[in-house]
Image 1 (cartoon, rainbow, N blue to C red):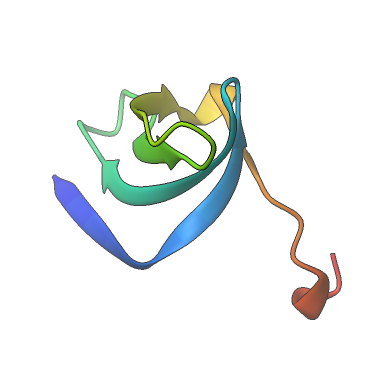
Image 2 (cartoon, rainbow, N blue to C red):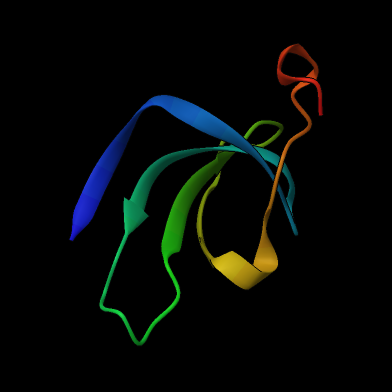
Length: 62
């Protein structure tokens, strides 16, 4: 299942800061795959859960 994220979510990826615009759920037996656009280069990359981290959000207190 492909889900569009509105608004996009900020992540830290192996390529740097990026925004996830879509998430792909293949099944219960697989990690979610996040489709991210890198802020510095505009490149589109897909990452499993284990390779990305949510960016810090000071307005939420963490």
